[in-house]
Length: 290
Ligand SMILES: C[S@@+](CC[C@H](N)C(=O)[O-])C[C@H]1O[C@@H](n2cnc3c(N)ncnc32)[C@H](O)[C@@H]1O
Image (cartoon, rainbow, N blue to C red; front, side, top):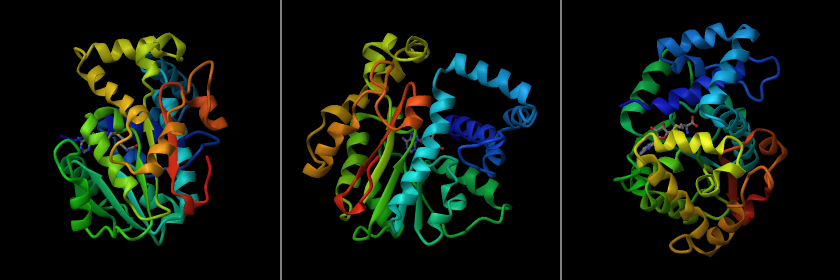
C-alpha cells in the first residue's frame, strides 16, 4: 500500500513552497499528491484559500502541518551542515532532499521505505528529469534487517553517513526503533542521525502540550492501536542497551520535552513544534551542534 501519511507531508511541503517566504522550496512535492489533494494545493495558491485550509488542518491535527514544515527546514540544514559522503533516508516517503539540496550533489543517497511507496515515487519522478542514481532499498522496518539490506544496496559502513529518520519512529515497534538506533550508533565515526519523535509527555500529560488533548483523542479513535505504537517512543528516553555509549549519552539530551513551559530546541522549533520534536545526534567528528 502506498503511504497516505507520506502524501500528507508532501501536501504540507507543496503548500509551504507556494508561500511568499517559504522556509524551503520543494517543487516536486505537488507531483506526489492524489488528485483531490492536488486540487486543494492548487486552490491554495490563493492566500485566502490557504488560510482556511491551514486553519482546518491545524484544528484537526494540531501541530502536524507546522511541525512537518519546521522539521523539513531543520533537517535540510542538518544534512547540509553534516556534509557526509552518504545519506540514508529511513522511511523516505516522498522526501525529495536528494533532488533539491545542492549540498547532496556528490553524496550517495539511499532511500529506505516499503516497496509500494517507492514504486509510486519512482513512477511519479520518472518524467521530472531528476538525478537517477538514488538507491531505493525496499524494507519493512518491522520485519527486515535494515543494515543487511543497506549493505546489499551498496552502503559503505566504513564511510561517514547521515541518517534521516523523519516522521517515522512513531509508527514502529520498540524492536524496530532499537534496530534503527543501533544501526546509526554503529556507523562510522562522524556519522549522525537526525530524527523526529513524539515525546511521551504528550501521552502522559497531554494538556501540557499545544493541541495535546486533541491529538491523543485522534490516536484513541484508532482503538488504541496507534497509542500502543506511539508509546514506543519512550524507548528513546530509556534505552541504554545495544547503542554504544556515545549514542546512549546523546539520547539523554535528545529527549528533553518540547512543550508549553519548556520549549527547548531551536527557535524554529519553539515557534512551530508543538507535538513532535526533532533532534540530531552527531558523532564527535561532525563538529555540529543544534
Ligand atoms: C509520515 S511519512 C514520512 C515520510 C518522509 N520521511 C517525509 O518526511 O516526507 C512515514 C513514512 O514511513 C514509512 N513507514 C512507516 N512504517 C514503515 C515500515 N514498517 N517499514 C518501512 N517504512 C515504513 C511510510 O511508508 C512513510 O513513507
